[in-house]
Length: 513
Image 1: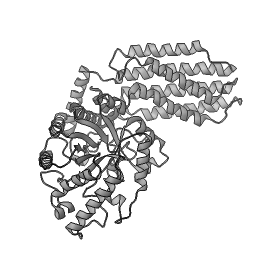
Image 2: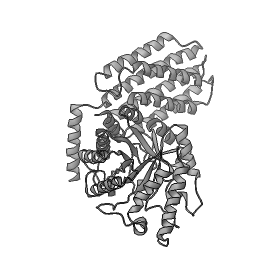
Image 3: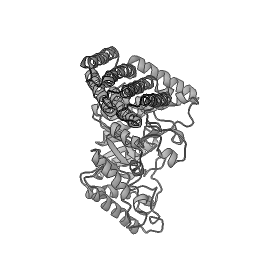
Image 4: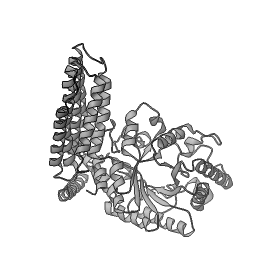
C-alpha cells in the first residue's frame, strides 16, 4: 500500500514538474559550464606561473566568454536566477587569482602543475555538484567528491616532485581554499534557502546546539550562515537544562548561541517557557499549586526580561494538548493550576518583554484534524479573553512514529484559519523521517523531497506564514537519533553537510515550482 501511494505521489509530482519544470536542469547546465570555465581560468594562471609572467588578460576573457555561452544556453529553461553570467565569471576570476597567490607566482614547474591540479579539483567539484543537481536522489555526490580528493592529492604530490615549489607542502591548504570558494559559486548558481525565501518575504530557520557551535565542526557553522537567517535554541532554554537546581542557572550554552546569533545578525527564538517535558527534578508533584505558580512566574519573569531585545520570539506554551485528540494534556501544570496556566503564561511573558513575539507551539496539529480543531477553539477563547498571543507555530515532525504527513491542502487550510484570527503562523520544528516507508534508498529520498516540498509550499500559499524552521541543521545531529533513539536521516542536509533531495524540494517550493 505504501509503495502504491508513493508511486501515485511521484507520478503527480512528475506531472506537476512537467507543467512547470523546476530549475534543476538549468542549475546542472550552469554548474557544468562553470566547471569548464573554472579550469580554463586557472590554466591561464598556470601558464603564467610556469614562466613567472603576468596572467594573460586575453586568456581570462576567453574563459569569461565560456561562462556567458554556457549560461545563455542554460537559461532557455527555468532558472533560480537569470543574467548572472557576469557575476559568476567575476567570482571564478577572483577565485583563480586567490588560488594562484596561495600557490605562488613562479617561475616554477611545481607551481604550474599545482595550479593545474587545483583547476581540475575545482572543475571536478562543480561537475559533481552538477550531477547532484540533476539527480540528487542518486546520492553520487560523496563518491564523486572522494574521487576528486584522491586525484588532487596524487596530482599535488606529482607537482611537488619537481622540487621547485614556491610554497611546498601547502596542498591541504589549497584544497581547503578551493572547497570554500567553490561553495560561493555553487550557492550563486543554485540559490540558498535563505535567499530564495527572502524573495517571498519569509525566513528559513534552523534549531542549533551550543555544543556543536563550539566544536570544531566548521561545516555546521558554515551551512547555518550560508543557508539560514533565523535560529532557535534547540535545548538550551529548556527548564531542566538551564535551571537543574532551583536558583542555579546554566547560562554558558545560551551565551554561545546568543553570541553566534549576534555575530551573524540572526534573530533568535527561545523554546519553550512552559512545557511538561525536560523539567528540573525540583519541579514535581510535591509542589503546591502556589509553589508551582511562583516557580513558573519566576522563570518567565527572569528569563524573558533578561533576554529582552536579544530573543525576538518565545514559544510561551508548548504541547498543552494531548498528542492525538481533543483535550488538554494532563500535565503537572493542568493538574495543579488548571487551564488558566496557559493564559497566565502569555500575560506574564508580555509584561516581561512587550516587544517579543509570543507563540503557542504544538505537534500533530499541522493539518485539519481533531487536535488542530481543539487548539483552534482554545486560541479563539484565549484571544477573546485578551490573551497576548501573537502567533501559532506548527512543529511539523512527520513520518516514522508521527505517522503519514497531511496533504498540502489540509495544511494550507489549517494555517489559513489561524491566520484569519490575526495571528502570525509558522512551521517551527520541521523534519521528515524516512523509516518504514519504501525500501529503495532513492525512493526514500524522493518521497522525503515531496513531503518537504508540499509542506513548505503550503506555508508559501498562506501570506501570514512568515517562516519555516527545521529542527536541526543536518543528519549529523538530529533529535530523532539523539532523543528518540531512531536511526533515521530526517533533515535536508546529510551527515557530510551536503544538500539532499529534500533541499531541492524546499527550494523549489519557495520558488513556486
